Image 1 (cartoon, chains in turn purple, cyan):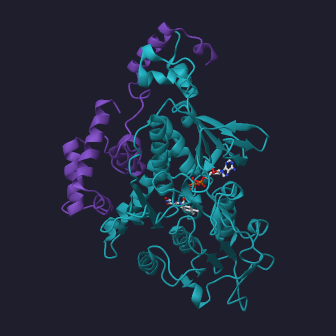
Image 2: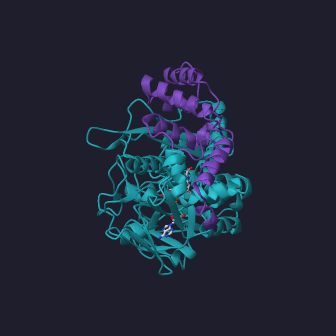
Image 3: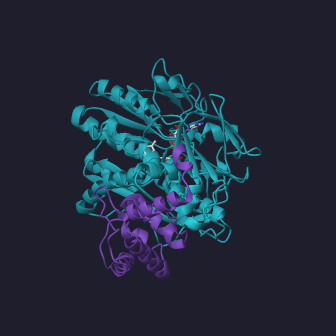
Length: 111
Length: 432
Ligand SMILES: Cc1cc2nc3c(=O)[nH]c(=O)nc-3n(C[C@H](O)[C@H](O)[C@H](O)COP(=O)(O)OP(=O)(O)OC[C@H]3O[C@@H](n4cnc5c(N)ncnc54)[C@H](O)[C@@H]3O)c2cc1C
């Protein structure tokens, strides 16, 4: 760690290049928005970035369109659920659109 | 490029020093001397661990130090399942290695004994102090010892509370295992507000599951300080179905309020001390307050909890200090691991937004508390919370609620599976 702090500017750039290749998102500051706040509440059950480690379905790989359709169907009761109907009823159309888009942007950034 | 391993690089980012500005500003503008903002988080439970992780996710340029007194953490969620024999203690054990190796959080094990909001420092029991720009406290709960006469910390070594998971859970489990068939288990839930409102009836259910299997002539007596409890109809329906005749619930006004305890004779006294109940196993869940460090630092109100700005979670008592999780008092939010995890992310966003100089989005907080009534019988309560015009977090009308009373066995089975899935999800989201 101490050694690295003495790196010169060229090394900084090289390091940035490596990091970009290895993990584009890890070093980037993330968007702070209504969508990021809402999405982060999904992660509690569905896993960080919507990638579930357990019996609750993953949602991180859904397209924006599919996610927003599903949430609206949960909300109307058209799609049967255990708890998602109770959750989806708490969000407006705009919020559903934003959070669905947020998940699909995460996919583009490799999450 | 060669010679810088990914690990070194992650470590380097973990320092939050000049390098971490890379992600934001690129190579040409790396500031050599600009100090990274420092956030100290006290308490590595559901609130603190999540907040530390998400501060680093929102902004890797923030130098985050998590101070936790224990090197591993036993989750309260799932601890009732241990009593039923559905989980082992080691299944509840979480640690801090991913927070440091994967997220670059500086994890420091020690006990915080004082905070100084004017000097912006916290002091540890070893005398060392750590400086901060923002401080987040998530110390959980502590008990009001002697609020029930005779129930102090020493008494809890005989009559366990098991409301902080660990040795207390093991003690209660052993006592249940040692009890003879035909014995009486007494469970005494506290008045509101307390950690995990559906926790006591879930505990009763899990004890009943064990007794039905191993000691079917036994009884459970609930001496409740309250007049009702979370998901009451659902629990009572399920008890009638799964454990008929085994469980008796006595509300506070009908003689449930426990006044005094005698650990020597395993007796609890109700009705102002006039009625005695002898138990073979007794579980007292004492009245509660904010974690000791929050209380000692003067961050509590007269009810013993920490009032906060419900948008940012900054303490109303000390600027620059944020109180999250069970210790905080924030509108209608219940004290649960789920809300602690959600508040933590909102707080991380609120602090990161301030450092970045952008607007703090409005909070959106969710709660989902699953309870297992039997291994294949799950029920839940859910809510979505937003700020109202008075700045209070309130449940959105029309959203949330409990599992339908009329649901069939399919939903109960699915919710039992999701209860376990929830455990996997929240522990991963908090600790890895
Ligand atoms: C039996 C039971 C079942 C439960 N089941 C559920 C459930 O199914 N779902 C749910 O959502 N919630 C559940 N809960 C509630 C949940 O456990 C709490 O709401 C949650 O732990 C609160 O998080 P926290 O961060 O406020 O406190 P905690 O998770 O308790 O973390 C506090 C941490 O701070 C540390 N600490 C305290 N003081 C200091 C100090 N001075 N210095 C250093 N470290 C310190 C402690 O060691 C601890 O690790 C349950 C609780 C119980 C008792």
